[in-house]
Image (cartoon, rainbow, N blue to C red; front, side):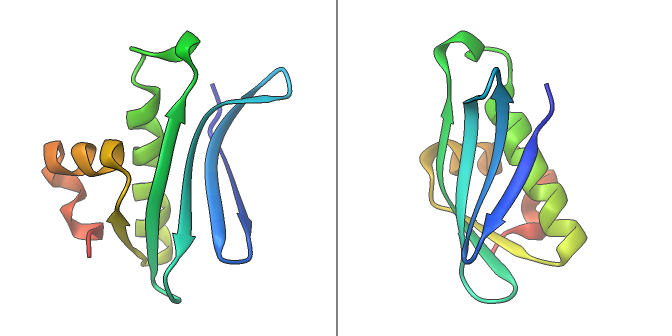
Length: 93
């Protein structure tokens, strides 16, 4: 499964598309030039239990490191992932 990334103005999304349908997505909003706020994560029932949500967060962390951006995980799922993974602390604000 390939995670894709799209940005439209101040909104962005990391997602997995299968047969023309988003089956997993994590959305964020830009909060200035160097910050993003993760506000929503959703994974289709057919993919639950496969770590897809974690992979979406991991992709956001990779993006943040590449672009020198900090993340505020307001989404409860993303916030829980950040609490469990200390290795992601470098991108938190």
